[in-house]
Length: 205
Image 1 (spheres, one colour):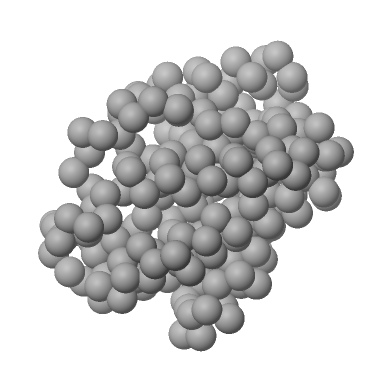
Image 2 (cartoon, rainbow, N blue to C red; image 1 turned 90 degrees about the horizontal axis):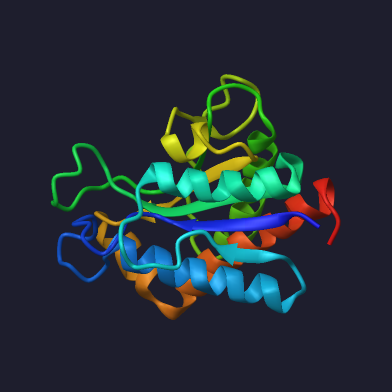
């Protein structure tokens, strides 16, 4: 069985969030992450929170935690999904118009790309019926949809890893949707379905 590590972005001291203060990224990401883990475990999957604390655990420590699991179980038997909300440059605390959902992996072709593919498929299935004008933000220059970066949580983690940006916390419409019961459930479901699809293809339940 693949061990599923769910990471929630940032910590209680982070100022990231909606300009009106209604959505705080650290809190929202933890609420989504906890529910993702709860639902996966209810279906028999081996899932846990990487950061159960409210404190902003350093990226180095987060990677140490997941890598310790990799050393114990083998890197192929672990995957990591880090949950965030996006913000438009320059992330200045003002409302902007950018919208959409996207996933990031480390640079180059890795197993993380396959995890991202499963999450993109799930986002299409779950979000499209609810947000008809949904934009899946992609980079297809290397033949797949995920965006790539040297984000520490992706670069330093030994296992397949993916970071999701779940709509924009500085877009008024996105914030209203993210905070709704329907929106929260959809964000949880897309992660659960995407992760289950990945485990079904590349591991054993």
